Image 1 (tube, rainbow, N blue to C red):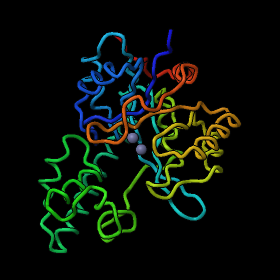
Image 2 (image 1 turned 90 degrees about the vertical axis):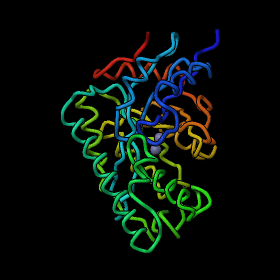
Image 3 (image 1 turned 30 degrees about the vertical axis):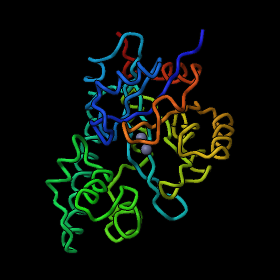
Length: 287
Ligand SMILES: [Zn+2]
Ligand SMILES: [Zn+2]
């Protein structure tokens, strides 16, 4: 028997994905997945909808992808931590996620104001329309395309516009990573450092930060990710083995029109079981 494909990182319209949560789990089942994790940015709003539409034979791992920062080498670097199987009703972590969502919206609004103040026809109402769920930078980029200011979303993420350090880029308030790990653990969840070496997304941290995170209770590290080159994967796999971190693999699927394909990267059964065994805040969802 072939082992089921396990993909532990996917987004729906609850954040910046293009598929509704119900459609996402249907796609996961037709792609032959055995387990899919729903990990929307700073929100679990899609979990119940995905669970209600879960096709038989597919397991849903409830999660979220938390935006945070770490101070390293005298600068502040953004990073993403995947949280799985935490108690969604635990008040401190729930409040932190709500704060992040509010900050995201305020931040996006300030960026839009700056672009409009420079004389460009971009409206906040339009950005909100383009974002069905949590407003994110992809929606800002979509609004720039929509207003005819740039040809593609990629053109928006340049220094001309909203790329890191660009004319209309603004830093965001994010959670401190140590606080994030503590909140996830106290809500009974497990934590996985998402795409640590995906340097195309901006500045990344060095291995010494992963060593410190492991010491602070990080559970695992995303080794196989579409934005990781073979060399990054080899380094991360070795680091995970050395530090006793659970290695995972995930597509980070965002829906149609995305170069990332559901199930194109996967997690071993052994890693999946190790994560589930260490979590106590919630259980994988099956019908
Ligand atoms: Zn991410
Ligand atoms: Zn993601």
